Image (cartoon, rainbow, N blue to C red):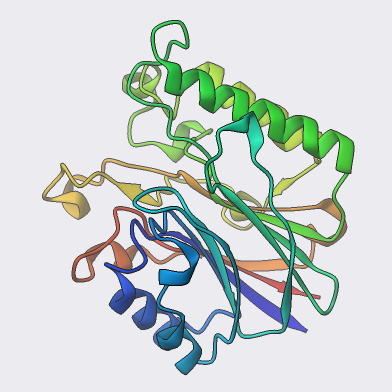
Length: 262
């Protein structure tokens, strides 16, 4: 049974309800994972999504910031939520489908502007969060699972517009890339996007500061789809819906898709 999963940092699910509906109506993924919903769960506009066939949702919300949600056309139950680094932030939710697939939706802290935990508390929180994700994966040894979300790190040289210029910029510093690699290795997670698209520049985020985001193309691949080894070979069709970055009142992120034949 093919299942298509999309992940999208929506940067306010209420403000951008119209383009969430546009995505659901035009692309029709079976599951859509949203990050940075910036809404309490009871304020998420579920009626509009239900009208499009997405009758199942698991979520964690906060007023004004953070927040994660999984919308599904398929029956789904909540499979847990973690408060890594004890931040009391809504940054993780998991859902399980009837076929046993568990989907983990993450919003890793951005980490502020200065890549030094001694002078920037937010950068330390980011590293601590990744460290606890690593320890969780070591302990749980996930199986038949997909991990998606805005992980706020572009790990590869071709995941950023200029590797050398961004080595000291938060999201591409060596310490972050190493922390993400340790997290990935702990769960033996396979980077499905790069499994399907092994070479070439690939981005999912373009700053609002760049008016000509498309022409300048100074992007980063911050949004990821990983899978456990037992199902990674069932993945196909990975893509970034770059066009969504140009929709009306867009998020600064574009949705990332992958399909699994399970």
